[in-house]
Image (cartoon, rainbow, N blue to C red):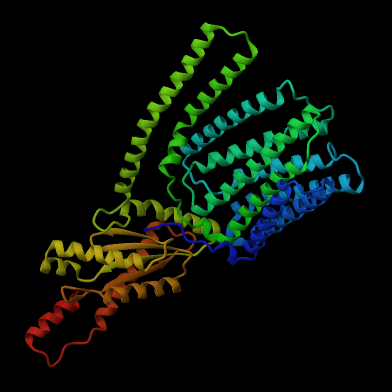
Length: 520
């Protein structure tokens, strides 16, 4: 069965080692800050230099991804914008340190804010381009609607608690005005990432998006605190905001190094199914948004207007109604998700051998070929046929024949990688998709499968398997690729029969048994 490939451990790459050391350094920094034994000037120097170096590392790692052709053009473009955002952050933080420590000028507002602001649209564009979510047109529409729901929710919260708050004042300069919208940029990117994570993604893609979401969350905490204190013109210790900003940059560094550790295989991994709990959140999202909107409205009415019993009853009645509908839909949706997953397993899985069926294979092969063509990857297909299975079935019965099919299907699966796809093509024929595999490597895998099958006995009979190999070339259709594998299989089958040596010096009974076994 096909599953995610196991990417290289983080510590097995230079980027992973550097990121791990940086993470340990940030942990030490956090202990130092929250212990209270620090000086503001020392922290300003350490945090400023630290943010510059961490973003510099993220930029360098990003350049590696951009220059690595195996990652594919779409992913390279996505990380190009994310890396540009990191470089803007480097310039902004460098200017901040220069104004603060070298010139002794308050760096807010300053030209550094223009580069800080550039970080958000560049990162947002990069996240939107990421080729992690492969969806149909209808699913893409739902994705944008989910994004709209999340943006509306975040917009309401930011507007009520920050921008329209009576204790908050908008700056007088353009630079200050733009700088106070940092939380909006954080929530905007966070909303996009959350909407993307509610889809079926590869395990590595989910980790990458998770780290980006964590970065935006840390950044939002710091930016909201910064905006509130600046809006009220209240004194504050910048060190307690530098701490989450440092954590945000480390989270983004983790996303980049995780992608480097996974390598181009991230584009070939099949998406892992999202958990039922996460699917329930996705299905309940519209109702949760309405409930949160009503709760916010209730707070506004209770704090702004004189209490009105009629209005309060209607408002809280509406809130209770949404809660009841949400609970009802949760129960119904939970059962629907369970049934959907069960029906999907039945629709995609061969009931006898537990490998994928032909229907799933017919869906996945064109996708794998399109992906190989788009990213210039190798791709091979194996077509496998159990020699003489019909004769065995007629001799020992269909139940024994079913045991053979199940056992051989398990043997096939054990000889394959987790990233490979095996499906029962029909009867005693199986087919295997081998991503990132050239013809030479595919032939080696076929030989290994043949040896494993030959080592197994069924009712004292050793079976063999004929395997045809075909490798993808640009311009081939799925039907043509399978036809090449089919022709190669029969070529090998005929060649094997010609090479068989005749029996000599054996009894008639032995010749009969050997003849039967040779047919198998």
